Amino acid sequence: MNQVIAALDATWRILAIGVLLGAGLPALFAVGVRALAWGTAAEGDAPDEDAKLEPTLVGRLVAYTMFAIVILAVLAGVGYIVAHGFGLKVTFNGLMPVITPKS
Amino acid sequence: MIVTPEFILLSLVVVTALAFDFTNGFHDTANAMATSIATKALSPKAAVALSAILNLIGAFLSVEVALTVTNAVIRIQNPDGTPRADLVADGGHTLLLILMAGLAGAIIWNILTWLWGLPSSSSHALFGGMVGATVASLGWGGVKWIGDGTKLDGVIGKVVLPALISPAVALVVAFIGTRLVFWITAKIARRYQEAGFRWGQIGTSSLLSLSHGTNDAQKTMGVVTLALIAGGFVDPVQHEIPLWVKFACALAIASGTYIGGWRIIRTMGKGLVEVLSPQGMAAESASAAVILTSSQLGFALSTTHVSTGSIIGSGLGRKGATVRWSVATKMVLAWLITLPSAGLIAAGLWWIGYLVGPGAGDWIVFSLMCLAALYMWWHSKRDPIGHHNVNDDWDSGRSKPNPKPKVPVSGGVG
Image 1 (cartoon, rainbow over the protein chains, first blue to last red):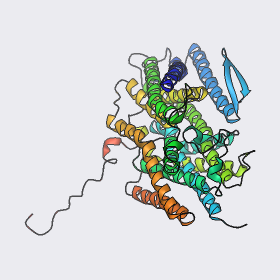
Image 2: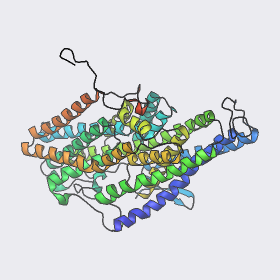
Image 3: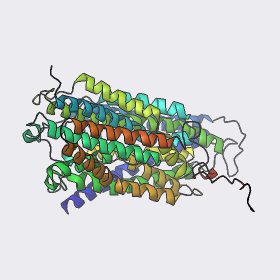
Image 4: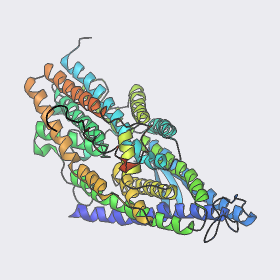
């Protein structure tokens, strides 16, 4: 029974962080994709499928900010994998990652 | 040096372990790449090449390899990773035969599920094979069925519970992610929606491939090194992983990935649900987030289960998409029987090897595995699936058994 409780304890953490990162980051990416089409003929209730995409300045800025956040998150993921491969343990002090050797 | 039966068995175990690593590679290409291939974010060949390179890099990144891979489920090692003294007293033969039969059982199950196009977990197959061979050899007490206290361990804590929980979690995350991205991008031209997310998909697939390389290649590295310790070729106190073991395992998993388990890629990318690229990115992000979070929490899950859960979740999340539940049901059934099936095959092989005795018995186990693999490979040629037809429509009849040719009966009255 203890095993089930331990598993459920892990489950809600994985679910919470999973939704935050696994669903949140694609959503930010989606905002970026949408921002590139802001105010152009490619956006609307009946978007013009043949419209050439000419993003507005604001749209561009928003989109690139979103893409940058997603890219940083992916790089953080790569960094995490690499650190683990080298036998380091990454813990989080608040939001600040702390890298220490595995015991 | 004198070639002893133990040395021959050790060589066979190493070859079998590398073969397992190879099947591990092609069985799991789909986890990272199936949706990217289905949405044409990457061409089939580019996808497997990218995945293979990242698996290779990932494998070399595993600098600190745990020797205790099998410790979670069976008791053949001391807590520090060295093999139990009573199992290596006879030149290591007892331990080596367990490893041999366990690996062979895992390989046969992996190839069989590939033939069926079903994504089953390679780690479950490996654990199943080891459990089966251990039960046959040491009895039920040789297996750690359940962990003590609240630390997740044993067959229940490391295999059964994660297998039940992880696909469900991935499904929920992918469902939410897919809903969000389609809601946000509903009002833009389909063309730009697809194109934008294809880029995102390449990033998330790559992350999954890299993570697979670091996680899975080192399982085989651990098993090979354990075998070398048992055979007396690696100092049990230092137990450094020899460099050639790393190279061989990295190459085995990367070449397996490059071969591509097209049958499984097809089932996951086309069979479960039709995938659009926003959906693909949501599914892959969900998998990556769940896998990395679980690894941080020490929750041992199977990438295969997570990826499948994510793809189903993304199908449920997109309005208008239908999940083929008949395909999903088959997969879940395959998951449920993976551990016991690989275990039964391994136990059977162990008994054959044991009854025939050292020397000939080892060769017979090895040969039986090779014959089974060759037979299944030959069988797959009747309905080949490769990069040329991996994206064909699922319902067009290709995936169904060949209809019987209607040859008019000549002569007679008909």
